[in-house]
Each structure stands twice: as structure tokens, then as C-alpha cells.
Image (cartoon, rainbow, N blue to C red; front, side, top):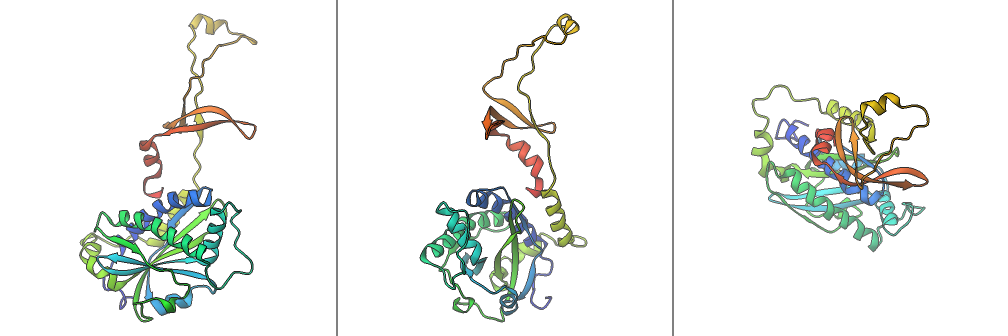
Length: 291
């Protein structure tokens, strides 16, 4: 790995991946119509031939991402998951056809290309603190042998992201950077960590991120806070009625912080509150680096 990696410490790129993982959660939740967990796995540097050999058999989408300045990176995603997203897009339950086809249909190709374009924007934003990059989505291929400008011996930095909806097993989405593509950005990728002590344990950070995703917060709402005189309070007894007035919007609290406001109603036969506004400061404080 040391021979393949000319950058030394890749902590800065790992940090960029963590930033991108937070954006992917917001991107895929509308597509999957469910709450999503997203995280970045520790980086791996390996030959492209080794990366291909380690991937599971079956339909895979290989989508070139032209990175300017630099060259061509790759977005790699599981074909079954892409077909499930396609089924969801057309109103289905998110089920891939059985048996799985060996090639993508035009509709599936369009779906993967659309996902690539959606991901390109948060990738550019994740890179912004270090360097301005422009990403253009290329033509999807179902086989890595058809990719142009990628050699089996090329050294690759593999950034892998886990995407899990609800309690389902995660699917994996990879953004693969050839080392040659990252060389124009070497001063910023290495300059941010010069003079630091030992690099943080990436596996520990990933484990901590996963653990934080399962932390539960109590949510409560205050419907009314009536004010009564002390004399009335002293004389209260069973059966007395304290009038209250519920306004149009009521506060929604997480711990001692205000999450936002909402309107009181019902959902599936149960009392519920529909959020009408979210407090940015509260969500930032709750999420931190682990949104």
C-alpha cells in the first residue's frame, strides 16, 4: 500500500469522505422514502485489478466522473440496488427483477446516470474546503473492461460509503479515485496534516459514527402552559377543569433544545405533530460531525 500511495497520511481525504457521507443521507432518503443511515468506511489504496477481483459477481454500474482539474474518477454501485431504486421511482415496492439481468435497460442506465449527477454536487461541496473541482458524469458501463483510460495496474484510492434504510443491511457505494487524479491536489491533501501527531484510527472513527447513529433522543412537545392564580391552585380538586388554548404552532423539543415547531393533528389514528419549521442551530448541534 505504501508503494501505491504517494501521499502518506490520507486523513484529509477521509475527512472529506465523512463530509460527503452526511450529504448522501439527505440525497438518498427521498429516493428510498425511508430514514437512511450513511457513513464512510476507512480508505483503501489498491491496484484496480485487485479492486475488481474483490467485488462480488453480478451486475455492477461503472460510471465515470470526469474531475477537473485531475482526470477521471469512478462511481461504482451495485446493479441490484440500482434496479430497486428504479422500481421505487416508478411507484413500485423497490424490488429488483428475478433473475437479475446481465445488462442495464435504458431506463436503468438513465437512473444510474441521474444518481451520478445528483452525487456530483455534494462531492464538489465536500471538496470545496481544499480545492474547487468540477465533476462531469460520463457514460455508464456494465463492465470495467469497457472503461476508457483505466489500467489494471493503476493505483486507486477507494472511498466506500454504506447506505442503510431503516434496519435493512447496508448497500455499498464506492467513489474510486486513481492516484494520478489526486496528484494535482497533493499539496492540499497532505498540507492539512503536516506537523500533526499520530493519525486518528480511521476504524475507530467509523465505529463511533455507526454507534452514534443508534443514539435515541426523547422528543416532546408543549401544547399549552396555562397560568392560574395561586389561590386557585391551592383549591384545585379532582374534577376541576383548567382551560387551555392550543395555538396554531406548538414547539417541538429534543432534550432542552428547540427542534422546531409544528401543528397538532392525527396520523393513522394517533395524535401527531406535523413539523412546519426546523431550527438549523438545533439540528447542527445534535448532528455535529455525525449527522
